Length: 385
Image (cartoon, one colour):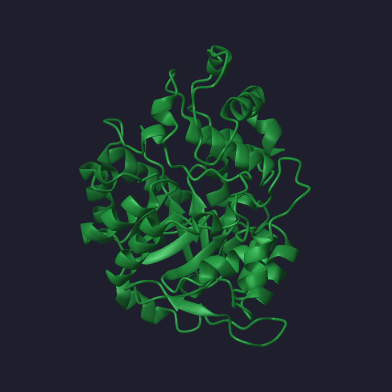
């Protein structure tokens, strides 16, 4: 399959804009041979097959889910929405979560076995009701040793050889610079999805890693581009979403932004954005990049520097990501799913009179942990209702 399969897609990613009749902007996805729209759909926040079809009709025909979105129900919804549409007219991908992920340290463990990942992917295909997917991602591959973790690397390579996926890659919320370089160095992975947004304005290590991976032929997808969507917990100060996307797409090595659209208004805005990708000085001002102090906002860079500082070894990065899902994206189901394996039974933040963790983003860690920890006791079916 692989690159040869790209020839089956002569029109799939060159659909016209329903409003203007102009073609959507596309970029090469590394060395895969595919051209993909500069904005694709992250379906995790959507539960509407009708919306998925509207996205397809608008010309955005690259869709992503994950095994942990809605405990697999999001994959089923996406598969149902695409049922009946010619299989060679769209691309679908998912992130298959292995067992035993040590999120706090960016590592896999002895529970992260070859067989368990193979089974996870086979279950995904069953939910999609497809015999193969186009892109398979290994999530939470952060540190170099994780990217090279032999059982999972071998499983991903075999899944591609078996035709269960056309292309393989990693997805990393943290240590994206290290993960990108490692993924390129494997000579096995085709692409990488990384957290990338304007909060990385002065991160030269990450920019250098993107250039390194891009020149090596790795396709690069950007997620978390909205950096929490709001500056504040109360959602009174929205971040300029158009400016955030233009900031990301000014990097020519980014093939596509995986946008978590869930409303028709967001779809229309993203279609319109593709007509004007020029990043301006006003965009910089809107993103508050002209200020001397970096506003904290809701976005956690997942730098992992907080983990060794906590005397109770709390998985603070995951809790901060959950906090953003809840208050920035108002996706409480995803917030709870993210923190599901974090042990909060002893209420660790109540054991310290003052927090010893110094957050590089300036977060009040103890306050945020105590706040989001309340979600742990809310039934999941209530959040999904």
